[in-house]
Structure formats: C-alpha cells, structure tokens
Amino acid sequence: MNCSEYLVDFLIKHGVTDVFGYAGGYIVPFMDALYARKDEIRVHVCYNEQGCSFAANGYARTSGKLGVYFTTSAPGAVNALGGLADAWFDGVPVMGICGNVPTNEMKGFSGVRQNGFQEMDIVSMTRHITKLSVTPNSAEEFPEIVSRAYKLATIGRKGGVLIDFPFNIQKTDITGR
Image (cartoon, rainbow, N blue to C red; front, side):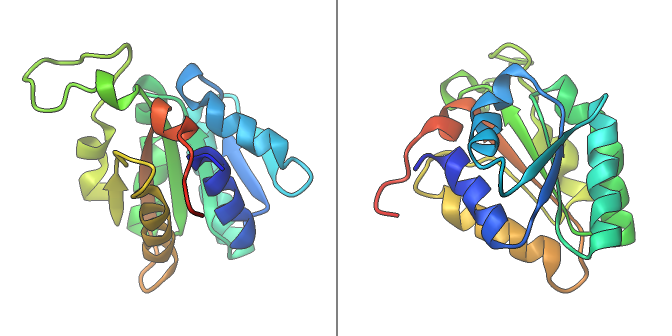
C-alpha cells in the first residue's frame, strides 16, 4: 500500500464518503487511489480550487463529518485558502490535501524562491489559519501525520488542517502496515 492508498483507506475507515477536488499533475497518485475505491468514496470535481475548499466546508457543516478537498501544487493550493481560512474561523472540520513537487525538488532553506516547477511553501502560508499544516518527508512518518491531522480537525474546537503531499511520498509504499 502506498501513502495515497493509505490516506484513502484512512478516510473511508473514518466515515468520509465524499471528497471535493480539482485535478492537477502533482496530485494524480492520490486521485488514482480515490478512483480505485470509487464504490466507497465519491469524488466531486469542482470548477476551481476555491470551490473545492468551500464545498468541503459546506459538506462538513451539513453532514457533521470531516470535509476533505484536494488540489495540485502551488497556484492550486493557494486558490483554496479561502475555504481553509473559513474552516479555521468558524471551527469547521476540514482537511486540505495538496500535491507538491517531489521532496528532492523542494527548495528547503536554500534561499531561492522555488526549485521545483510550481513549488510553493504552502505550509508557511497556512500555518496561522490551520490547526496543523505539515509536509511529510517520508512514508514512515505519514500514518502518524494523517492520524494527527484527523484528530486535530475533529476534536475540541474543530478547524482546518492541511497535508502538503509531495509527489514522491504519494507513491511511496508504507512497509509493515
């Protein structure tokens, strides 16, 4: 099972029946994992990323479940910030999943604006409007990150969380699970 398949399985096991998204190159492995489980979880394709995050927000408000949206990297992730901020302000359980460049293309602390095509440090941009904003750096830490994000979004004062999902981590197998 790779990290994308693990995340889809986790969402299904935690009662998520619908996700909202907008396709893009750096989120394809996650979309493939959703498609493989299409009989258990519905994907609602929105016209833009902002619509995805607000649709997930509305879904969470009306269903009482975790609202989940996905986007691709950089411009896509930035376009969804309105719905994520609304989840923060109104205490709505929303999980944003945004694709990103592979970890070996990330700029890190190099001082350059970007290293990978359409790379964006979305974690820094969302740190103050989420309960958790994180980039997994390995498949080994991914299950704990997903569990922590889910708990933070749904327990206590609810709110938005963001998993910045590097392309290579989406495809990496989780061993021993």
